[in-house]
Image (cartoon, rainbow, N blue to C red; front, top):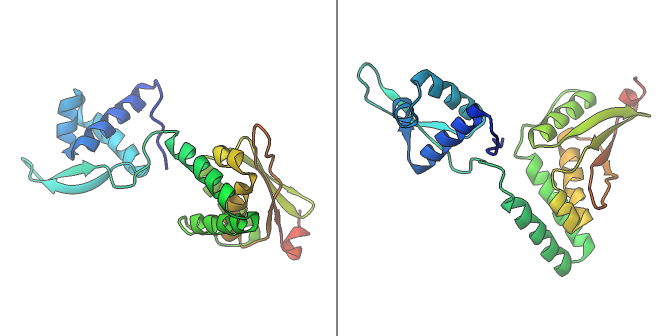
Length: 216
């Protein structure tokens, strides 16, 4: 989960400062409070939010006056900030691949990318509807702004914008990765009908099993 860092909210700015300090070195709550000029309870509340977001973790403990104090740090691979570098890198990579390999091979690669991405998140279980709802939850956690509707025995996911717009702009077949991602999560047939124009937006149709598709 990414914690956006470019906000004017005072609490968010405090989190930014905590992250910056922890990137420079591991610290206890008391050390952070002293550096930031804040109370320990105020720091603890921000640390708790960062822990839930996967940005901060306990890395050890040190001897305290009454009991050991937890030491906090930023785990390797934590997603910090909203840098455009990953999107720019991805779009350039897609362009290079598109220029060098046949379209059919690119589709195969995109399918494997989507399946690999799906393997990194908890797989939804339950009925077809429950799996689709779980997939929507995963999409939103990845930054997608999408709506879900049921139309004529199919689920239709309509996105407002596109979370991989730079990649889609580089090559529209990038949507195959998301199609494969959703198919892997839902264990259902998925077809992409995305808008690949100047302002890409997502649209995926998910076929429901006949027994469930008849319910409304």
